[in-house]
Length: 298
Length: 298
Image (cartoon, rainbow over all chains, first blue to last red; front, side, top):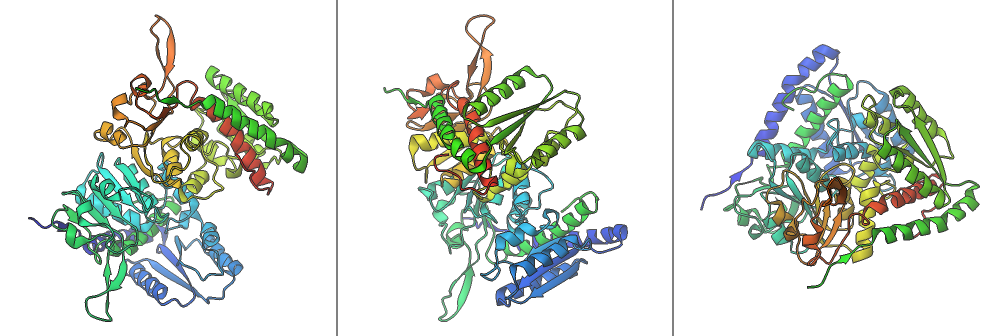
């Protein structure tokens, strides 16, 4: 029995960041400024603070401008929307990311709806969801599913005609993932909590994308021998050692690894892609906004 | 062998038009004006002229205002966009429909993008595609797939957990159909010209929606016994009698009728729904624009 390949998302992400870093100087030379990513952080949530710091660091490392806007948790909806409008109007800002979730008194959807779709590097604005749905190439696509697609194309090449099953139907992963795979001419099925006999539905797939947020829900026996598996889950569970925790995905990888062609590990698979794709989206947005062609290799 | 039921789209559409006609007087009483549908027809294409006339007649029959704007085929893009902008600004217009296709020198997409999404009763604007994708209940949904969903819910009741296969991935039927079925918690597969072994993919389905525009492409043997079939195709083919033509769907109905639970005939199934749903969308748009709750039964 041969072991399936572990897809190295960390290495792919590093390569993507390298290509971005190679392209940035050309943009700077043409426009006289760096591409700029503005990240808005409301409140003191420790996890959100860590994410925002990582994004800022990665942005600077590829030669782009990182702008952080920290606001107190008690900021009003009006003040936050005013800040987003200022960033919309600021020509040095190419990408705007509002770190979610926002404190409970704020309306995530209303804030996201305020972002200029051309600067919506998270791809959460309804205009970008619509552009993705109709196949408009100017869509800014949510980072996680776009990162998954990049890994799949790198691993498999042409995806046309392959049977893909996406498990999960969230607006930020499952649904855009299905749209992207359809755009690559896969036969796409979306499975979810109401799906009957999900094991046999998943068993049809050449490509499985699991995005449910439930630890090791997808059993090894569900997966067809030779399939390629993308595990989007990041679930913290108790570790063997008392009092410790560990991170596992949505797929029972130990059960699947012997018969899959390839699978993304957790951690180290999809996770590292997200920030790299955010930088990619920012660089694409900068080019599109400047009327420049989108460079190859992004 | 029992014959499958023929789903009577004509009767359902008549019922829907009746419910619309019952609701219109209440709107008129509250707002002091009729809901208004503006249809723009460019050029003299005979088929388009017939469609526009039918839409106008149906609009008046349910008590709404029909406004027709006929423009010569040589109208410029700027003039056409100006007309749409005037209709956007006109408060008595609740729905705007630009009859497609436009003459070749005009840009369909740019014209559609000009329509106020709140008046886009065809549901073709990217904002409505995005709202449908993210599950926003204020989405205006393309008439044909919404009509198909109405027939399915009328026939089957709760669709949750059913296996649905949509054949075809156009922006006006296949893709929104898949979104609607996903919204009803079906397990949804989208099949298309690049799908391998499409017969076996279709054979999984409890619900088949065929929207490919190829006469009788879907064979009876592809369809699982007991499935419910919606045939969106309207294809003109040579009739048995020399020199005559007839209309057939995308499904080989004669092969399927003995083992399906129910199927929409062609003509008389999906076709009659389209205009009724257009009137429904116009009435919904009128209520939403007026800040009134959307009435039950639409």
